[in-house]
Image 1 (cartoon, helix red, strand yellow):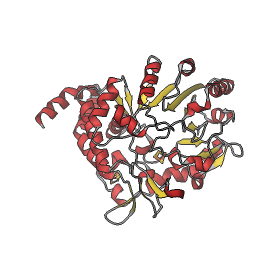
Image 2 (cartoon, rainbow, N blue to C red):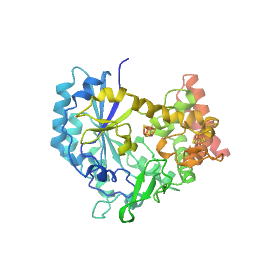
Image 3 (cartoon, rainbow, N blue to C red):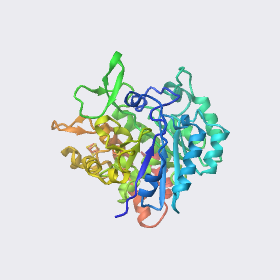
Image 4 (cartoon, rainbow, N blue to C red):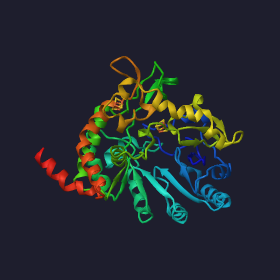
Length: 393
Ligand code: SF4
Ligand code: SF4
């Protein structure tokens, strides 16, 4: 059976030039002691991946702090070991370091660039500040201007409660045709000096981190964005969660791991070679090996990944299994499962209420689009029906 996998590479680990107050990865500096640079050739990754297309997903921290020269050398290694395969590169950046030189590198190597922007100025600047506490909105918008014409994608990383429609309109106004809306919800404990440290589910001493979105707030945000999108932008702007929802209604595999029945296809290779099965489970107890000592393909095909993958389904509480929206939700991501069901079972997703609100809100539109697809018609034909329906409601 051919092995195809996607790997997230972290050339600088948690190192970042910003200090965003909700970043789940800054704590990893404690685990890895700050900046180092992975210089392992990507040979194992390319040779072990039996797919004809191999994708490198560059993440951080802030991956651009590795420097342009690091990436130029990485591109040389990729070409050296490609052996006829197509190599794709994606990179997620806060945008503040983007220069003409970076744009040239991205263009020459056909990078798909995701820039993290939270929304309009005051929403973005409330959390995304540099290490001196200065706001970053202007720098990020300037970077987006620089990147335009290079096929840039913008990702919004944070859901701003009560501001869904406004955030959506802003992202549309700066030309974003691809949007992700990710709920920031973390479980944390008090660490040294009273600092909050993010921990995985299952810690009885942990509580909700104060920067977390509320479940209802998340649901409202999604419904507001959806209402803007469905009356004007279906087929012309891509909102990842809506695309995933439509796939669930249609019965296609979702493109986002959180809504799959199982997961674990997004291996992470840290800057020192340590391997984890997910970016959100980079904790010592979840480390499965190191590429300097272990074969990456054997790690990925081994029992640790299988257990991680199946646990997503097998550890769900009964409330999820009998839930009306299970086909769409699948209990979402295990990193958010720190609530208890009414029957007292652990493992309920803390965003459950928000998801129920969202799925019931979009249900009629999803059914309409499914019907269009069944008749081989474009889903965008939902727009006039949605406008009419909303005017009536
Ligand atoms: S733990 Fe969550 S984010 Fe990680 S692979 Fe599974 S579903 Fe995806
Ligand atoms: S909506 Fe709630 S109960 Fe239903 S599957 Fe999702 S997390 Fe479970």
